[in-house]
Image (tube, rainbow, N blue to C red):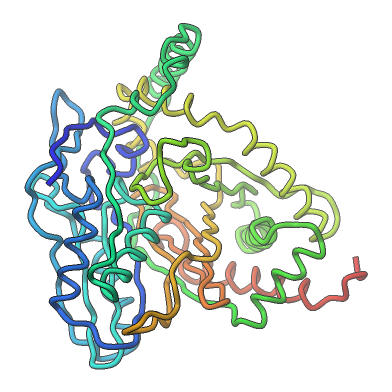
Length: 424
């Protein structure tokens, strides 16, 4: 077991919500074929041995949470008999609200919804150690070792401080440190002047799932390519427009999109666990025409991504810990200036066929955030089909409103895909 102590980065601390309640990321695959308990245990132990954060617990020191590596025991597996095809969805809703014993660890668990021919493996981790890319990595490795127990998956060492992955030149830059301090001071002043109070009623979290079949998924990709836009832009434009139609004056015409930090920080490999993601904010323009709106949004996304300075974000975050508690309280009490968060995971890097089983479906991961505005839309692609998960809370956005937004957005996408290319 890996022994280490590392303070949670601000982004990790926010996803942990300072332990105020569970913020769990739930990732599920459906497998056809025989799975043995012994092979599953071996696979989980192998994956746990690779990733230091799966060997960690969370303790508080000097008023801040720390990851502490050590002997935390094996990743637990709860076995349920599979009686219906949607049993895993009921498990997901339970797992959202089921806290981890973070002081004891480990920070992961699996629910095995089992039948003789088909099983769902439900992987649950606190969001502070797991983003969507991490969930894909962990599930891919679990399935690989489950199929081929002797297959090596490598290892890596955890960094002891975020400063270890920030270039020395930036750490030594006095101007950068001063800017970080002044921004943190500005946040302290902002939160001291801004009253934080709970508004609205607490409600029940829900998820709406749907998929586009292989034909429509392929047609959408091809149409976006012919229009010189990204599928991501098309989704954002359709969802923002649908939100505005349904919510009318309640719409803010803004979507938040997380960006995988691994694109910018070379020290964080693709197969390493990490949970901090920079974000960009996007809006629909008033320009006429769906595809032209997509082109404008794509342009805005590219421009904002180009300005991301990931190392500076990591450096600045170290100065924001004094306002972390107020930031978390603000997220829990303020609806923010956006309509929803949108995450496009693209084609998932998980094989469809193995020697001893096949993966029938991979479901987009979900998190039931405790924020005042928890609305999140996640889309991923597997077996050439796009699968969506729309998560919110009926205390903020009613289930019927979310269904209306989903239906209208899909209507728009289908309409523009089947239109002739020269229809404008």
